[in-house]
Amino acid sequence: GILAIVQVTATGGASGSLTVLLDSQIGGTRFINIANTGLMGSGSITGININRTAVGSAINATLSGDAAGGAVRSFFGDNIRVRYTVGSNATSQMSFDVYITGIG
Image (tube, rainbow, N blue to C red; front, side):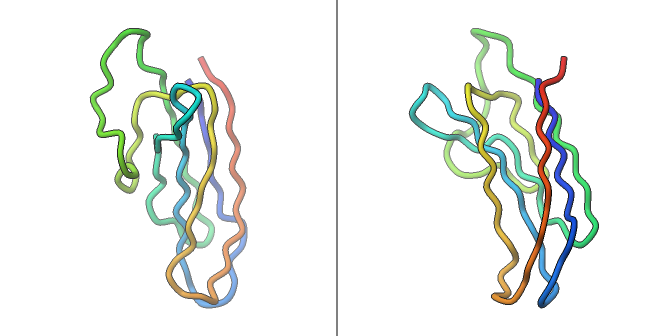
């Protein structure tokens, strides 16, 4: 499995929120969202634990669109990428760190 830790380190401008999404590349061609932190604010820390589904088992997840806030899908492929969105206010600024490590 993998463990990702997301930490909001600083905020600026109008109060805002941060959403961090982890995607995994499936079959070498397409990225699928596998985790969504949900809304995070100043000083937030979130841990995401993702365990790979057993080889050959079915994945019971809709593979279009992003996971719901706070949701984790139990699979990942060969590559992981990080995406993020900052709240809807144009002057919001968020600084954050993402740490990803293999576990297990």
